[in-house]
Image (tube, rainbow, N blue to C red; front, side, top):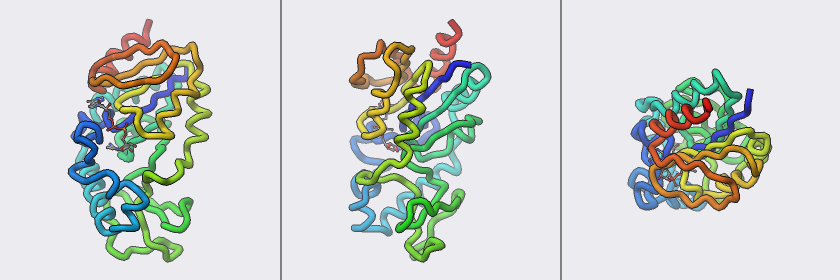
Length: 227
Ligand code: NAD
């Protein structure tokens, strides 16, 4: 089976009712990104950050995967599909995708603020004010914030470099280091880009641009992959 590697971003989940950054002018669900998704924001106002991710977790519990998510899961019948996502939601998994690497963490997990490896599953419940991790440090969302290293990058680069086909769906490719993954993709393989808006892709690949939302775009890509 050919190895189909797919890099997804916030646009993948837009049709599930979860807002992107770019669509809201640098705000994430009415919050300034630097206040809720940066290390500085966490030190400045941890209560605000906890409240924000508690809200995102509750929103996620009520969201459902869209036909883009389920379409990618269905591709596993014909391809060895590996998803690399910048999203912190779990909609790929809930649609049935079996290999999903989360570059920026996962809403349904929390972690120690001292030890990034001490992660616990919390499902959709809130992190409570003053709640502690097993090592007694403050429990925080298991999200990779701006200003933090992305521990899964090396694995993601290995996966990208082993692709036979590569696709980018619903990401502005503005957030690094994730956006740099396209430079690990072998030069001559098919390269799809699905996004309803123009995206600047700085690569020498011949990009097959499907200018559609994720749902319709995945259906079109699936048809093209058959030939
Ligand atoms: P971004 O907001 O910078 O870009 C979103 C992209 O999706 C844009 O190019 C936009 O044109 C496109 N888009 C909008 N509607 C779409 C649709 N229906 N179908 C397909 N594409 C659509 O998002 P990013 O590049 O992922 O970077 C933002 C960061 O924010 C990520 O690191 C991510 O962790 C975080 N984030 C995550 C979520 C989530 O988990 N669902 C939501 C918002 C932000």
